[in-house]
Amino acid sequence: SHRAFVEEHELFNVTTCRWIYNEEKRVAARYVPFNVHALVDVAVKAANAKECTSIEKIQDGAQSLWQLWMNVTHHTLGTFNRVLSLRFDNDVELIAKIPFPVTGPKHYLTASEVATLDYLRTEHGIPVPVVRAWSSRAESTPVGAEYILYEKIPGTQLVHLDNADIPLRDDPFFKAMPGVLKAEMRLYRTHFSQIGSIYYKADVPEPLRERPLYAPWFEPYEPKANSERFCIGPTVDREFWRAGRAALDIDRGPWPDVRSWMFALARCARASIANHPDARFKEEYERLISDYETLVPHIAPENGRFILWHPDFYPRNIIVSDKPPHSLNGIIDWQSALVAFDYLQLSIPPAYDCDDHPHIVWPESDHEWPGLAAEVADLDDERIQKALVALRRAKRKMLHGRVLKKKEPLLAEELHGIPGVDAKQRYFRPAVAITRGEAEGLVLILYSFLQSRLIWPLIKGPDVPFPVDIPDADAACIVQRWVEAVHRVEMQERIMRECGVDPDGDGMVDTEKYDAVKRAFDEAKARALAAANSAEERERVLRDWRWQDGALSMTAELCC
Image 1 (cartoon, rainbow, N blue to C red):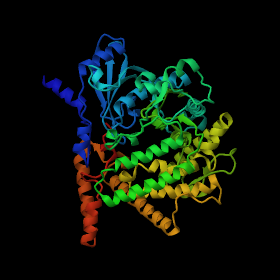
Image 2 (cartoon, rainbow, N blue to C red; image 1 turned 90 degrees about the vertical axis):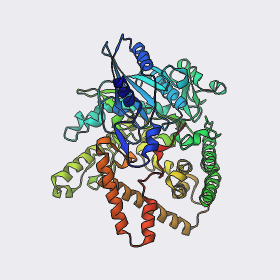
Image 3 (cartoon, helix red, strand yellow; image 1 turned 45 degrees about the vertical axis):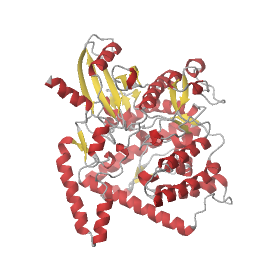
Image 4 (cartoon, helix red, strand yellow; image 1 turned 60 degrees about the vertical axis):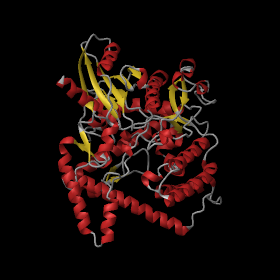
């Protein structure tokens, strides 16, 4: 029927958002047909119901699952999953998630998320979504697509309770902190045997199933229950799969040590440019990969600790009870969670972190609270309110550090201390950058070498030379190129804001706003061309204009 066709069109296609560039490619990547009746049959059984009373697309897809629980309609970076709400005659509501080809390796990504949620709940008691049904192989299910059916966690996203006007003791962020800290501490204390992702043993190649789950020095909380059910398998890290890399014959883990993982990144980068059409770019990139390989043996620790960590610990992913005292109900969005080197995993949850602010004065002692600078009294009401919000976030960060210092001082020192984990992450920045040269520019890799060199004396001592020779003149040139790249990104973000686009949205806008936004970008481009002083400069504007078909876009890159 016509109605059935309309419903299938809605369920299979992106209908709530558009892109101002590379739209055809991104829409095609997000067309995922499936057997609606088969999904409903599976869901009815999973819900212990007799009938499904409604099925609704609540999101065309987002990088995070946070929008599912509150039916939030705006979009975040990406569109990586299609999300449906299914209601039943017994008042149960389930959330269905179907991944897009841009999300990651669909079998491994789905199987790993399900296993990770099960592991977190049974091993650590962390409140995560309960999976009612799932399939990680489209060809093995009547649904015809990979899917996960979750129970909906009741409550409110912590992000909606960000209120600086109530006393700190009543702040929902403070009330939710014990549950978040428990999760942080349990994950920090749990050390795995390899770098990769968590799976049920049946979902990985047989040779991997007998490897121990945990590091030899770690005593698990539930030694029999989970050591026999779970194992570490190939990584779901998108860097090993995106932009056609899924077709490459490369090592995707699991890896027994940091050095093996770092060298695998180099091989991934080299294989990804093997057929690059720009010979000069390829030659320079290969030289940087060789420099990186020279660096690896010197910075890779022999006995790294591998931990699981939440990939997106923002307040939108923390669900609390609707009414005071707003206790923790759940932590959602564990898709793409990795077991990785602890220094590269650890970070203060953004719910309890804050940016630097010119009107916040930090105390010298941990026993005092941050305060407002004296000049705040001279600001207008809007700026005063922004300063008060910044002060509340600074106090949350201070409180997080204080409580953590009492309960887990080593983790507190890593997260809140100086130099702490931030310096160590700079030291290992080349590993993060080496596979991103084509997407983000080779200057990213060059600058990562400088960041590592800056921390090198703190780790190795002042008299040990850095393994990669970077003359001072070259370093100055790299810094200048980096500053120019940062400035260029800032200008692009300013243009996007002026045109009504979220800078983090990769050119994505709500469908009803598309025409107005597209006109705004056309006008911005015309102004940039009019401001050019020469034919060469106009040519550069046209060449470098980011928002045009064919430009690189991370959310247009297929992973399978």
